[in-house]
Amino acid sequence: MKFIHLTDTHVNSGDRLLYGANPARRLAQAVDSINVEHGDAAFVIVTGDMTHWGDAGAYAAFRDKISRLPMPVHLMVGNHDDTAAFAEYFPNAPRDSNGFVQFTLDTPHGRAICLDTKSPGTHAGSYCQARLDWLSARLQETDDPVLLFMHHPPFKVGICAMDAIMMQDADAFHDVVAPPTKPAR
Ligand SMILES: [Fe+2]
Image (tube, rainbow, N blue to C red; front, side, top):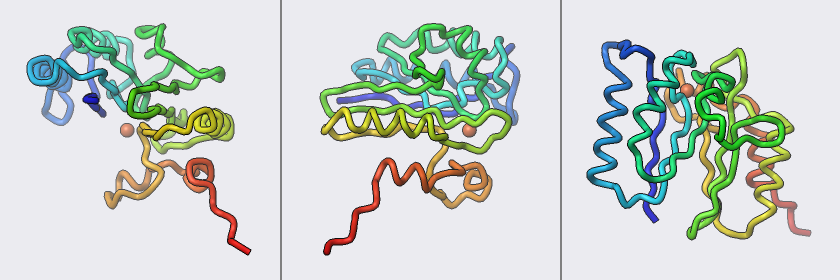
């Protein structure tokens, strides 16, 4: 199975530059490349920070660029996204019963579980009890291999600025994903 993973497209409205680059144009180039070289991909997953400022114009620009992808595109939120603004432009995007932007994709090679690690008011990630309960239930539904997709890593990656905003409550997350084994008697 081939799928495409895009992340942190950080699109701005009005073709505004970001650190000297044009994220909307770069996304358009990525879409061109996918269509020319990987048009046979089963789906595309975008793991958050679709936009830089989370404004309506940026979601409109983002939607315009990805609309040229012929395969299903699965969208996740990051710390730079605004869930309400996102939902205005993608009203059919799947959400869990608490409104978090998380969902599963069952593929021939296992279950992809896409998590919402966004924490309003901070750039740092978090994963509250309600989300842990949802994840636990989704894991218990399958014996297939699992692929986890998430914006904030639950471990340090060695980049100070990134590690400062990693998932803050990672221990509880690890307990759900890989429960500690009981010592043998
Ligand atoms: Fe981010």
